[in-house]
Length: 270
Image (cartoon, rainbow, N blue to C red; front, side, top):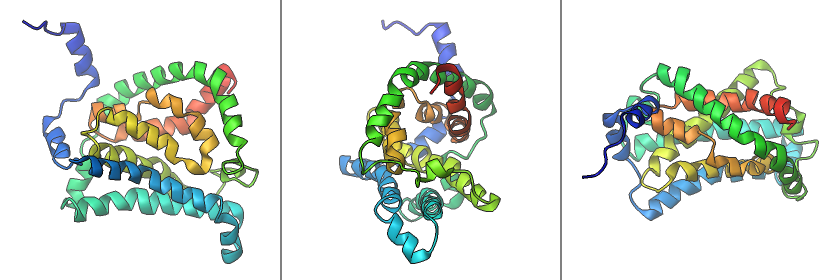
């Protein structure tokens, strides 16, 4: 007879994993079923990043001349349109007109159905702490030389004109709020709420989406591509798969953007 898992192991699984078989069946019924369909959704993960790259690099100066806007505002508007218009609107349109889901069903599909207080208060802090600890050696010894190497390519170089160097958050409050919603909620809806569900039949689906998420940031490639190896330990997708909701991923996204960098800078100087 096969050996049964120990009681301790079962408790660990039960602690981290939120059992919701009805939700799992619901999501799986709309998964991509063929290799071509899966490849299509993986490509969709890269497409908005390619568009953002074009607006940030080759099209930025022509758009400045055409609109009269500054370099930083051209980049900001392009990123906001992508994050709000594409990341948030596209999944709802696809779920409505391709999959036939109502708006309420789409919210459930994307992970907004149940608020997960246990996941937020216990599982999220534990996995966040684990990720931070595991990332420290990489940030200390690998990240900086890899960033500098990538930033040496003219096609990827983030000059002083780049929105990252000008300040992502130095905008009037209304515009800033729109940008923040698109960044922290829009990206989670698109990548972890929509694409991760669609490629659920793919082996290591969480790792594929994690790699694609890092790679899609083509407009700031030296930063995010230098972090690409951390995709293995970044728990965005794992949190969503374990807890069956998107709230934990949104909060983890806030942590990585606002606190994680400060922690690694304090502990390892990067």
